[in-house]
Image (cartoon, rainbow, N blue to C red; front, side, top):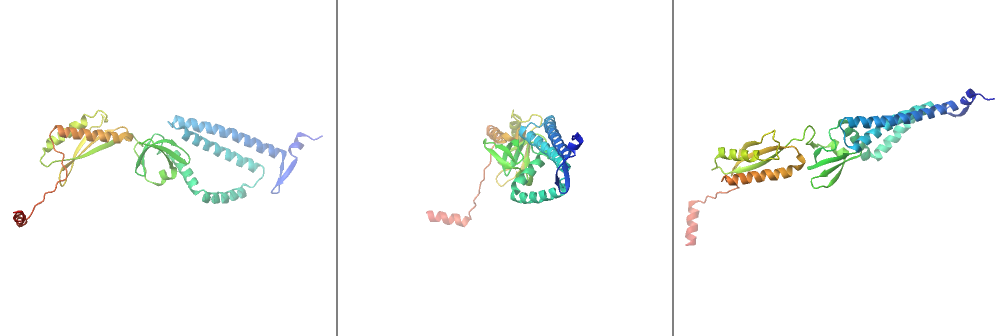
Length: 287
């Protein structure tokens, strides 16, 4: 009568000259099941860690947790395959050749996927951040493994390939804080009282209730233009995404403040001087 040892040591087949018995098959199955169990634990642990670190986007959390699951599962399956006696070196060599061929065929997808991993690891761009990408201001709504979804001020949703966020220069208005400066450039007549102009501009900027109250406004005499003395009036806001509205309010405040104070906002002028002989000739021609 066959014993348990005889059953477990019974050779089923051979792989590359290495016999595979029942015990080997059972060991590989157990390793695979344990790997699956550990990968689920790693997935939940990664999700919990990201939530504790303040990540709020469930898409980013799910993608990162899933990646941890695949990594642990892949290592476990590699151990299970090695247990069966399969030469992993030859398998990896064939896999590498296949991966290179697949990489050329799916170059853009691979590039975006790797870029997504870099964004998730570096955390330089997060959901809720306000960016300027290719000259357009957007707010990030979700960060995926292949692309990032962002919304414009006109409520249009943009699907941005992650490779663009990695390869190009991106301005992140909220990387360290949400403070953003908006400014108004205005030119006044050279006949104006410049001390009075500064006082009016400072008062107009200080009276804006929606500006950041901890950082005061700044009024600078920028330059002496061809037709005006140019001033730069700037205030701070804590929501860069609404800067267009703030810009409009600041311009309106400066306009009405100068108008009420009787200060002329200069516009381009051209003085034409005619030669005396030309003027006399013109008068003689009219007569």
